[in-house]
Structure formats: structure tokens, C-alpha cells
Length: 224
Image (tube, rainbow, N blue to C red; front, side, top):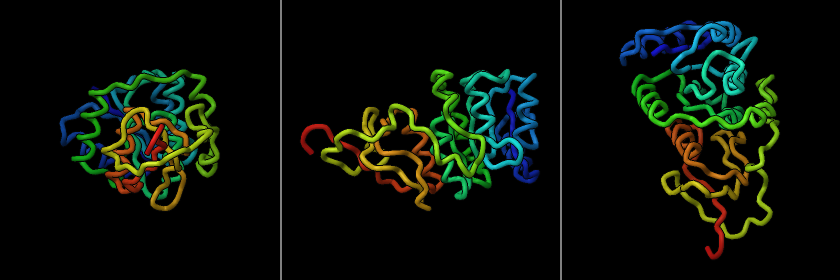
């Protein structure tokens, strides 16, 4: 297996490499920023990618979007793990739309990294259509929150009764009756988002890194 690590901060890049070696990965390629990564991806097909989000020139979400669109030599479904800090909360919703495979808190933790890698390799992504990824704007980190909603993110026509559930009570098919916000009140998921198995695992990551509250408002069909 070949890993690609993308981070513009050398010490963080070296830490990720050290953890990967410690848990058994030997073939590791590093990129100093997103532009360098896209250049590497013109001639390599990594088994998985670990990337920072906020980088100069080309940010991590721009790399992720290019991968999901099939504009690189990497497989569209390749596991793509994002390194996040609390300052990245306003763009996590966009990362979810682009089917980021997992989220890791900075500075990276070896145990959490190993857990995420085990999970994403066991449950491969089924990429959505290129047209769905193509409408998601990732050109400027500051503007990522102003994104176009996909069909399953529209506000519900009638909210009806609501239940407040923990992450462990969510099941595929639930619809959010209220938005999910970060601890800093940044929008992550809109009301009307339909819960999927894939999304449940991503929410678990965000809970583990302390980015969201374990309280989800879910619309209830019929009687409460």
C-alpha cells in the first residue's frame, strides 16, 4: 500500500509519516501543499490520502474534489482522511458533501489514525455522480460555507414532530429537523439532510474530535 500525506507544515507532515510507519506502513509519499499533491497525483495512485485542509495555493478540499471528479490518477473512491482543527469547522460541511472518508484532529494521534484507516479500508466508498461533486465550490476557504445545497439537503416542507437523539440512536433514513452546528456555531449540516450509513460514521469522527455536540434534532413521521 502507498500512502500520500499532504501538509504544508513540515512538523505535522513528519508526525503523520512517523505515525504511519509506527503502525506498519512503509511506502509513504509526502506533498508540501495541495498543488504539489495534484502534481504527484498525475503519476501515482495512492492506497489512501491523509491531508490537511487549510493550505496555500491549493487547499485540501480542492484536492479532494479533484479526486472525486476523477481528474487525477487516483481512484475516485480512494480513502481521503482530513486533518482538522477547530478553525476548520466552517468547511467540514463541504468536506462531508465531497465524501471525505474520515476526520482526524490536529495534531494527529496514532491510535485514532489506525482506527480510521481500519474503518475506511473495510467500508469502501461508492462515489456519487461527477455532476453532484462538480457543483460544490471549494475555490476559497472563506467562501466554502456559502455552498449550493444538494437535493437531499433542502429544508423539509413540513417539519412535524421532532425527537432529539444521540449519535448512537441515528439510523439511515432519519432527516434532520434542525441544522447541525459546530461548537463554534458554524454550520456543518443543514436541516433536511437525510442521514445515511456513511454520514453516521463521519458524525462519529466529528464527535470524537470534539467538533460537534452529541444531540441531533430529527423529524419524526407520524406520531411522536
